[in-house]
Figure 1 (spheres, rainbow, N blue to C red):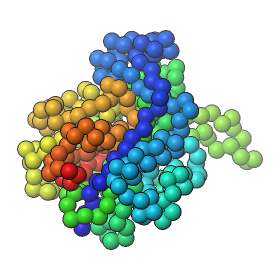
Figure 2: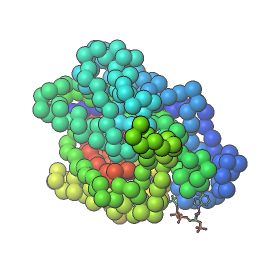
Figure 3: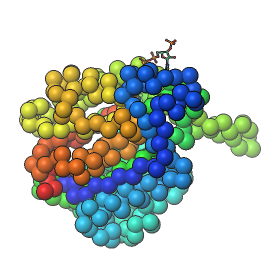
Length: 323
Ligand code: COA
């Protein structure tokens, strides 16, 4: 038994800012941002929250899957920007969609989060514990950005994506994933330090901090290695793969990965120009778009691959089973 994806959904905040707007916020230029990242605009939450976007994406995915919310046995929400420490975002989604029979939990693996969520659901489904799961990537990273830091504030956006998966004979073929805590600090975001009666400090919020070039080098090395290891394990080659849905961080990272894999860029759909880097939400948002536009056809093999904070990385290889 494996899992298949049977429905998808997404939600982006209504409001967006383009690179020209950012020129009024920090010392940057549309030319710098576009040429270094490929990003032209990003949606930012105002009324929306991490949970409200997750709920909207989940509702769409449930409708698209044509199931009842009561059929869902597991909800995993990948996020590093929850609205509450607890309840988990997954429990908030459970309540809002009426998934009364689900066990619900959040998963923290930064931009690899959605891939780790699929791979975790796969383990539960293969073990025969659950049959139907709702998987979500949702972020309001804009809450963790220092809007005076031009090296990070131009990169990220808010949004959510979701998929319903169920046990099946065809679908997910294999997976590969890993982490390297030793390099964790090259991309980090700290909570305020502990302040209590024994240790009184001013609770200063932490912001996303990044050694951009280190992250870039990590991504363009690790992702092709991970994809090739996965293909080798499954006795497949690049020729078997129709689509690569990569985490949408930077167009130069995607171009470089395509080049290292010796694969045409046309196999790498991308939407980061409009949304920026939405962390755990980027892959399910892209998945929803290529599914609803009819770009992916039944029988196509696709690889989804994420990379990011932790450091973490992961990929899964699937056969698309929706008509
Ligand atoms: N606008 C204008 N100039 C900027 C800028 C901005 N938004 N951000 C940084 N700069 C400046 C720097 O201050 C530096 O100036 P200096 O040479 O005078 O010191 C110069 O641009 C080059 O900075 P550098 O950091 O070396 O640029 P880069 O070519 O490495 O590009 C990134 C920066 C962030 C685009 C690139 O490193 C990257 O994409 N890294 C991966 C980031 C990522 O995807 N993270 C998330 C992964 S999940």
